[in-house]
Length: 234
Image 1: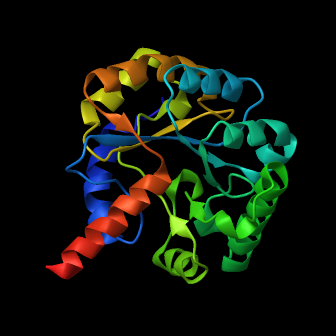
Image 2 (image 1 turned 180 degrees about the horizontal axis):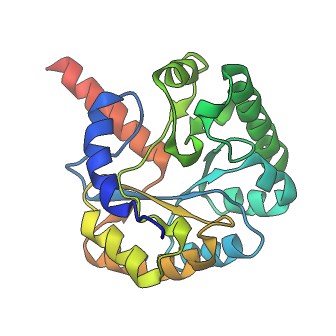
Image 3 (image 1 turned 60 degrees about the vertical axis):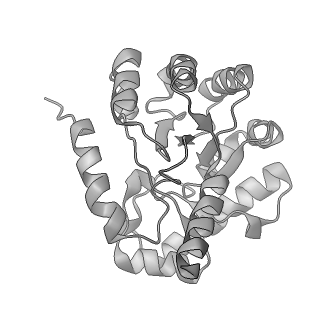
């Protein structure tokens, strides 16, 4: 019997966000913006369908790509970038960081950077946003990421789509928890990606109807820096 973890994520978010404030957990909670993020791709079947949905609504999203999938689909990775989406790191393989040494994590991220850099003709040093696989890290890993100038990105709305609960359930979980500044995490890889375009096609118009605007993770970092500057000036 599979245990559903989806009901726990809102509580984990409330605990982890203040515990690890140097990570990006959300955007400005006073502004009706949300970020759609997609992990584990690109996938040769699921990602193109998703890109078409995003194009239909003129939405810019953020893709946390696995290096191995980028190397398998370099032209698709470049298409993501060319369509104006934000590209970020998710490791080379989907290996949880706490089970790797710090050197292995560094090598994984370097290979991830090189794969995306080769596909998109980008400077690897521009690729600094990282979401740890499975959202797992330790204080030591977080310290290392900051020392190496990476920007760790987490989440605030997790519908657990990787276990394929169905389109309607995934959407209802998002709508029940979304608010100003939400970072919504979905998946366009082998686990959960089958439904991702259908979820996006129904979720986006509902969020637009609620008055939300869609931004990239980079824009949320800019919001965070602006808020920090305002606080320092008070």
